[in-house]
Image (cartoon, rainbow, N blue to C red; front, side, top):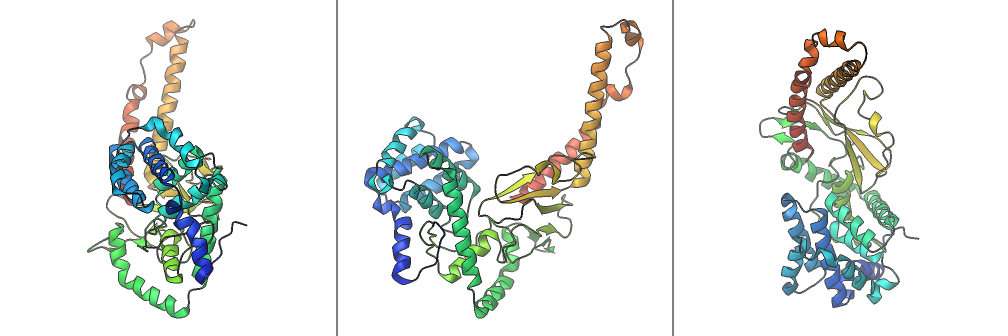
Length: 377
């Protein structure tokens, strides 16, 4: 039974140790291989220059997490910068040979999850890394999903244990920090007041509450109730509302529409947000229709944004496609007995300028998508 249960006293310490102190329990070769494997994987997964700060911050924190000496940091940053990528398989084999992992290699997945959640964040890039390391070590991905679900259940239990006094105190603090929180995540301006309608206290699952708590996974979560509530609120809303209800109340700059629509009913630490590029008349005239078969996680949303302009773009693309069909049909006729008639006909002006049909809607949507992207971030 992998379900997480809250223990007290020595029981909690005992269950915390296998997860939180895994780095200290591994031998030095195992710890070095573990950090090196993560560094190489970071460079492989996120080679872009704009990801360099994430790579460096992650590997520096991870070296400390594993209690490795500072002298190994230059080597690890070199791995995270793209050097030594050919050694990934070797490091994976060294790690798997450590006696601690022979019986339970999934402890690595558990440990990486704990590290990634230690400050109340669950960065999507960190999860991609965990999935990759899990794959390199031949651990079924289901192990990670079970750990995430178990941790989610533990946090829910901690939320239910919140006392009335603690709830009043928390809500009072939330009200005081409300404007500051909005400003930090770009949801308000100094003179504009609140521009987003939120539900469940903290609505954005990936906005950290800043709880400096080390979260255990497979045995029991090493969380006090206050910290658990803070992380709970941080990860998926104080009332578990997630992104549901996250909707703009009035226009923000160039953005007129921005809302998350639920695609599934489940709750998960790992969420999926699907974004539609344009809308078309008929079957795919809604934001949810293209994603009806999406199964990336049990908690999925689609972003409804600027529907008016996306519909205009879809209509323009449809016109463009029909124009090309007509052009191809006329080209085909040139190879038939009707070729003389076709050559004598003047091309319709609408087909000669078909590029202009899409130019304006495309430019408008390109600009608005950039603004929506900033808002989403």
